[in-house]
Image: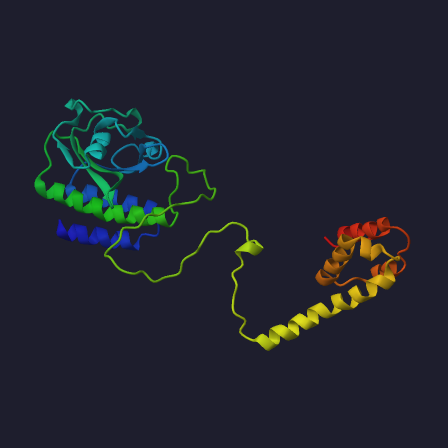
Length: 292
């Protein structure tokens, strides 16, 4: 048994994906235990059903099709109790549920062990035999060890997104996944964290100390010089009294000047503005459309 276990672990570690791992395990376990059937049922969290994902000995066409609810059959009972169930004739057990498409009616001996990772039920590993007999302690211990090995592989596949909804292979859309860790010891963790925040706004910008004050002063003078220059010219550009009476118009013009470089055609139009305040408003409105 130990030699068989070592070979199975080696093959599992070299398997390219989860489906290959499941096929390796059902094939190798069936040979090691010298039984007629080995099957793996995985629990789909979305539907809360055990889906037959791999088998050696049952009808291959039932893989991915046959399923049981969490409270159905002996497989459901293994998951509910979270402990192995060893029966010499499963068909006589009150929880027995026959799945027609699997062709399991001729098998009597049953041994099922839960696949558990961090106290979370992932599925059930099952072996069946046509003879009426009870599996011995060595075979049961071997199955428990294999379920522990399989649990780590399945958990890794879920974390990397290798498996999604077990009953819907066509669902290829991206979904958000939540992972809960288990602390190994009390202490301080050091690593990279990503903070999810809403859209940035000015209130969320923190105040920071300038590293180069002189550089900040030069940049400030460079950026304010054009706006200061045009603001000094506004009284001559606008009609008499327009700038004084329309503070909002004057301020809007200054803001536009600070946030964009006006083309020559807008400067020429600004110089030719005459008459009433509506000309200023129309000019600014046109500029806002041209410069979103």
